[in-house]
Image 1 (cartoon, helix red, strand yellow):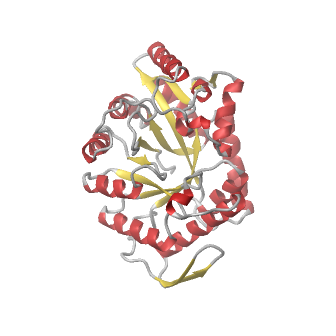
Image 2 (tube, rainbow, N blue to C red):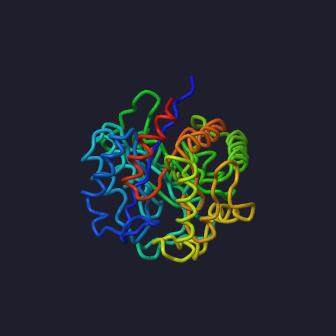
Image 3 (cartoon, helix red, strand yellow):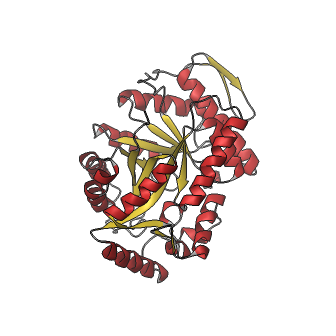
Length: 356
C-alpha cells in the first residue's frame, strides 16, 4: 500500500519584515507571531512547516524548539547547514528535540551559498562542498542509529561517540527524516545515496519527471543502502475562490514586483545555484507552463520557491499538485503570502481536495 502524501507549509524566520511581499508587521518575527502560525497549521490540517536557514536570520533550530514546545502535533522541518554544525553536536541536538517532542522532528540539509566567513566556516569548490555534505549526512545517520561510533573521514572525525538520548524509532521511522535539495550532478549523487527525501522546486512536470528517473537510476548505480529515495515539491501556491481572481491577483503581484514595490523579492540579483538558474530560465519557455505554472515572477526576483507559482482556484491547484503526485511526489511544502491568512485559506480549501 502506498504511503499517503504529506503537506507542510513554510514559516518565514527572517529578520526583516516584508518577506516575499508579505505585510511588514514589526512583530512579524516575535515568538507570539510565529506560534500563531504554527498553531494555525495544526488547526487547519497541515503536518508541519519548513523553517529556513541562513546567516543573518534567526537561528532555525532555536525557533523549531520554541514552536515545538508551544504546539502538540506541529512537525518542524528544520533546515541546517554542514559547517555551521559539527555532525556530533547536530546529531545530539536533533535527537534531544526529537525525544522531547515525541518524534516530531524532520531535517532539511542545505548546501547552498551562505555567509560562511561570518561564522568561521569555509568551503572549496562544488566537489568539496558536496563531499563534505555527503560525509556529514552519513555520519549523522550513524550517530542516530549506532552506538560507540568511530569515524575518520576527509572532513569529520569522531571516536567512540554515542549520542544521548537515543532516538526511539516508531514503526518504519528509525530517525528524523532527512530532506535534501540541489539540482547539480554533484548534489544528485549525494541525494541518491544519503537523503531520505529529495526536494524539488517548482519545475514543470516534464522536468520533475526527468529528475526523478535520473535519481532512481543513480540510486541503483551507486548501490544505495537506504530505503528507496522519496521525492518532494517546494512551491508557491496562489489560491483564490475563482480561477479568474487568482490570475488577476497573481498578475498584480508580478506587476508590483516589476516596479520594485513588493518587498524582499530581489533574490535574483546575486549569483545563483544550478537549481535556481533552472527556474529563472523557465520564463524563456513562456509565462505559463503546463496548466497553471506561472514563471513570470522569476523575471523580477522571487528566488527559490518564490520563482514559479501554481495559480488558480483550489480545484485548479489541487489538480496540478495531483499530477506531481502521479510522478511520485509524496512530500509537499507549500506557501503563499500573507502567510497566516494563506495557512487558513489553503488549509480549508486546498488540503481537503488533496487529502481525499
